[in-house]
Image (cartoon, rainbow, N blue to C red; front, side, top):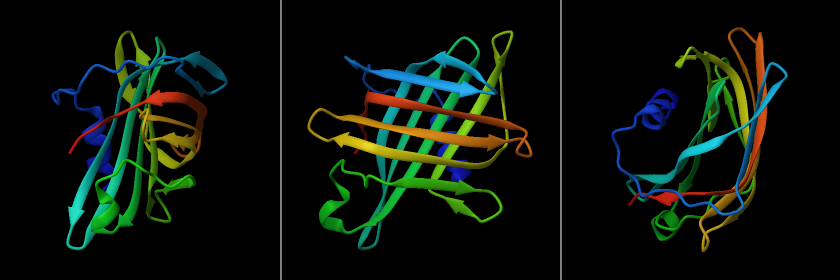
Length: 165
C-alpha cells in the first residue's frame, strides 16, 4: 500500500486544479539543510471498501535541492463520513520494520535536476489543523532514510488541497 501511495504522488499525469494557497508556508530540512518549498500537489482521495473506506492525503513539495512526498492514510471510516474531507488530528507513522504504513515521507535529492529517491526507514506526519471549508491543512513531519543515515523534517502551514471524488 505504501508503494501505491508513493507512486500515486510521484506521477504527474493526473490533472488536478491549480492550487491557490494564500498564506502557505512549507519548509523542509534534509541533513541540516533547510529550504523553503513550493507545494506542487496536495490531494485528498478515498479508497471505498464494503461498509466504508480509507482517506488519503498526498502532498508533494519541491525546492532547488530536494523534493518531499508526504502520504498519509487515515481510516477506516464508515460510509456516512467517507465522503467528507475531515482527517484525524494525530500523528501518522510509517516503519519499514514494524510494517506501519499510515504516515510515509519520501525524500529525493536533486543531482543536476534529476531527483534521486531515498529509501525511507521510518517517518511520521502529524496533522495539527484542518479546515474542510477552506480546504487547508497544517502539520509537521520527520523521516529517516537509507539505513537511518539520512534524516529530515519540516512543516506545512495553511497548505491547500483539492479533493478527488
